[in-house]
Amino acid sequence: MYLLRQEREMDDESVKLSKEDDEYVLIDLDDVARHIDIPSDAPYKLSGLDTLNPILTIDGKIKLTGEYIETIGTCLAFSEKEVSAGENQTPQKIVEPVAKLHKILKFRLAAFDNDDGETKTTTTS
Image 1: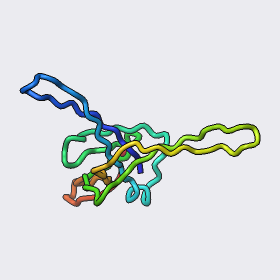
Image 2: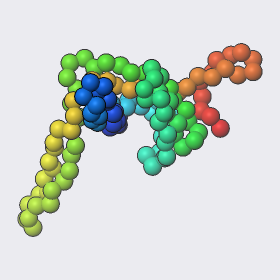
Image 3: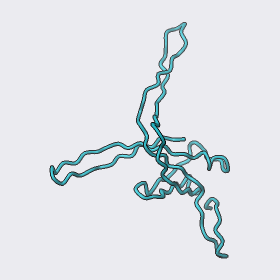
Image 4: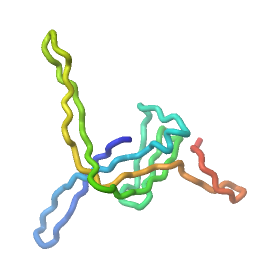
């Protein structure tokens, strides 16, 4: 699972001010990763975040369709970093809260219609 930070600009007509709010979305690739290998360093393009079904294209070959799922209860995201200690001490990890999440973006392989009219789920070539 991956954490995505999305910046949104909001306009208030009455005050003529604009401010940016950060919204965090958890990207769930667990169902996809069971079927295909996704390299951790592969380039990706995420589009349509403001639609019901965002599209994630990985390495220009794998096309995934997403669906937003509301979280049940409170979902928290944390960051973890190692802090070097003294000579004879074990390095320590510091865990800090990053955000509260209200949405999970769950992805699956995108379906397409072939020439025979059948719907198939696969990767693009």
